[in-house]
Length: 371
Image (cartoon, rainbow, N blue to C red; front, side):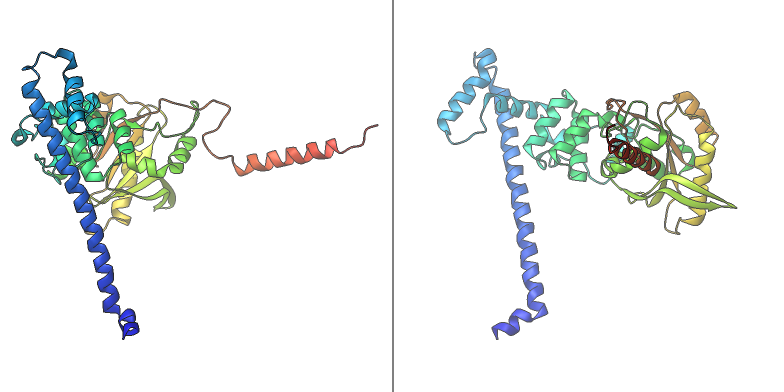
C-alpha cells in the first residue's frame, strides 16, 4: 500500500503543493517580521522626536538612550546610537503615515500606476534598504518613495539599489527628449516616456577611452544583463544586428528589444558621436519595417530609442517634432575607462592569426643553431 501511495501522481502533487505552501508561508512570515520591526523603529523614532527636547542631553541624546536601552535589553543589537538616529530620521521622513502619498511629477507618477503608494509600502522593504535610501535622498520624501516603489516593483537587492542611488535614477527616469506626446495616445505616451532614461549610465563597461562604435556595442553585449538592468524593468532582449530585409537590401538593427509592459518592440540605435538628425531617418525606417514585418495584431506601435554620446536638446526637439514615428533621444555617460593599451572587445580572427604567425616565426628563428 505504501508503494502504491508513493507512486500515485495525485499524492506527489499534494506533496509539491505542501512544499510550495510552506515556502510561501516562510516568505510571508519573514515579510511580517520585517514589517513589524520597521513599525517599531518608526514608533521609536516618533517617541524620540517627542522626547529629545524634554531632556537636556544635547548632542548626547542618542548615546544616552542607546546606553539605557542596552541595559534594559542587553541581548538586542539594534539600539546603537547610530541606528537610533536612523530611526528618528525614518520617522521625520514619514511623520504622518496617512499623508505619505507624495505629489510626484508627471514622469514619476506614470511609473507608479502599478503600485499605489500607501503608508504600508514603507514597511515592506528591509531596514538596510531604508537606511541606504535615507543616506542618499537628503530628506526628499518624493525621492525616497520613488526608490521604495522601484525596490518593491523590481525586487532589488541592496547592491542594485545602491547602484541606482549612486547614479541618481530618480533624476534620470523618464527624462529622454521624445515626441511620444505627439505620436502616441494617452496614457500610452506617458508610459512610453516613463521607460526612458537620460542619461543612460554605462559605467559597468570595461572599455578604453578611445573606443569606437563596435567596441561599445560589443561591451554592451558582453554585459547584456547589466544593460537590461540599466534600460529598466520590462525589457526583453530580442537580438543584436537584427536582420531586416527592406526592398532589395539587408539592414541590421543595432539592438532590438521587446517591452513586456508596453507590449511593443523597441528599436535601439547607439551612436558614439553627438546627436545628428540624419540618424533619425535610419531609425524611423527600421521602426516602420518592424511594424510591417514583426509587429503582431496585439502589439503596440514600435518605439525607437536613439542613444548618443551627447546631444543638443533643442536640436533634438526640433528633429523629433518633424517625425511621425514615436522616438526618444538620450545620451549615455561613461566616467571610467581602462588604459589605452587594453581593448574593450575581443581580438578579431585576423589579429589572433597574425599573433600566432608572429609567434611561430619567432620560435623558428630562435631554433636556428648558433654559428
